[in-house]
Amino acid sequence: MLTAIIIFIVLGVVLTLLELLVIPGTTIAGIGAFILLALGVFFSYSTYGIKTGNYVLGGTVVFVIISVGFSLRSKTWKRFMLNSTVDGVANTIEADLKPGDTG
Image (cartoon, rainbow, N blue to C red; front, side, top):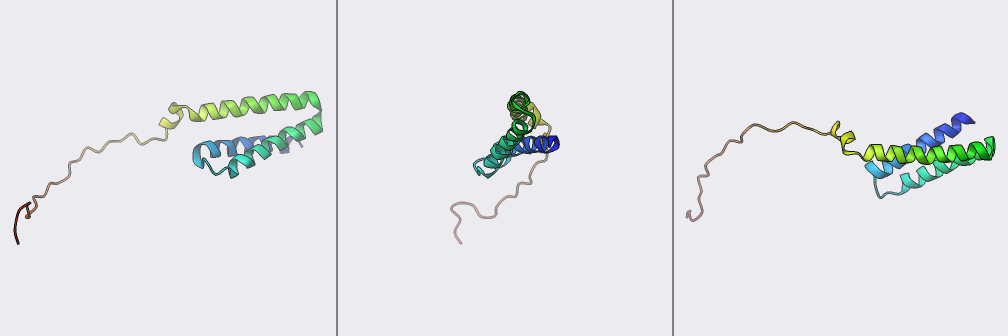
């Protein structure tokens, strides 16, 4: 059961990050994340008791906050950004037609 609790919580955090960063506004990932996180915490309460359930609840909240905070930092995304520049020059072609020409 411990493995299931960990899987529920990790998948819930992954869906939370997907909802915030990749597919915002769809709410399907957000609802799924909430359900998975709630299931993980519920099973920890029902299997291991109140004390361990409280630890899992607190750890889950801290884990979600740290994960979201780390993923929203700009330094994290600089690794994925394209940093190259275009140094070339486009060829300019003189147009044979100019404003005011008659055909």
